[in-house]
Length: 230
Image 1 (cartoon, rainbow, N blue to C red):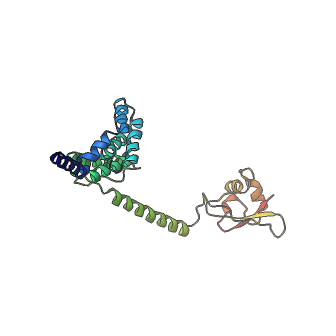
Image 2: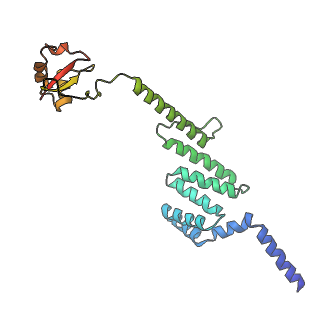
Image 3: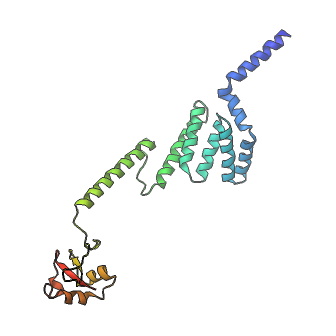
């Protein structure tokens, strides 16, 4: 009787010590949601399969196999970024497994797929075939911030673009004859009419109202203040 009890105690001890190797994995793959996910995957219902594997991950702390299957489902759905996360979780939970080297290779494959999805494909793997994803994303963010600052400074110092410059604030003239407009580079009567009236039909009216300083359209010069008739 005592020998049987000792054998039972030894069996339980081995089972408890082995949870990091086979126990947790066994519980993981025997979960009903895990099995249902495998069925959905065989039926080609990838998204429903993914939902099943994610349920197992939510309910179990060390669901390494579910992380691996979820990563594969994300790759099948063309979503490599969460696939990278779940592949890494598998490697973290089972670093010494036989599949770990293969999963690490799949991580690199997912990283390359993610790079291809970025606009302009700005990042490529290095000569060794590896990608420092976080480092390169940080570098891109820094470059983006630098370009924003340069553009802001350039816009502040650059002279007004005649094609986009807004008209100067208008005000009544001393004689009360209407508004005024300050000519900028590139202006002509039709363009001024478009700015002030929304169409170019009042170009001649603007010339007539300013005969004293603008005898003809060619006489327009930046800095002139024109009377804009009502």
